[in-house]
Length: 298
Image (cartoon, rainbow, N blue to C red):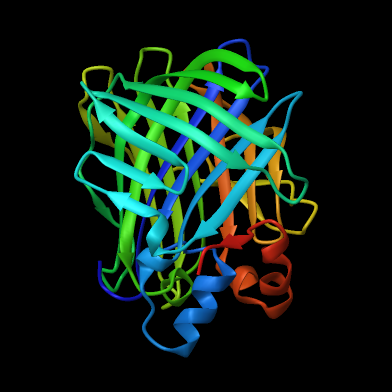
């Protein structure tokens, strides 16, 4: 991977009973890390010296982990990735994840196993930045996820999603921010919507329907709905009519939400995120981040 590059793999899951949610992001070149940002300001930085596994659990039991580690803690092949004591690997078309993380800022173990079985095939990569530096690819737009954790003690199954992002250079150099969402459709398909605001002032909007057979339909972007701002004052918006159900993660530069959205006579559960890279770059946010993102090893 080139200096100042990055790649991350994003997984989310919602339990069938609606009581639990989970997000996992594996970073090589941790784009939201204050340590990686500081290293890049000094000159070209090695992304493999800034790796992290972010796990967020939502529901009656909440946990947040994002310990950054150095290159000695990284092992990767074409089908596997190990970051410190945690690992993920493809086995017979199933993504198997072993977790052994420590939550922050209040220490608590997050240990156990996840399994993600894709139900829809991978979509083609999409170029999001005008410079050609940022790519996004839905790997499993729809999946079944099994959660089997020892700490905290959680067992559930639900609907899931997996994608990948990769590129070069700081995200804040290419984007002002974005809004993204994914919705599981009643017919077994998935609706993906992405709105980006680029640094050059241009906008990009995607509205993709992935059918239950894996076919991909590009729909016209819908009119924007304004949602309530987060407690940190971040703007939230979505394509088409939408109502805010709950806020899962409310941070100074990022907010993750659950929406209720109408779709052709049906009501969808929608995972939604809004990101402000202008806010991320501000000195006061950079000063706050180490409390949630400790670094170990180099």
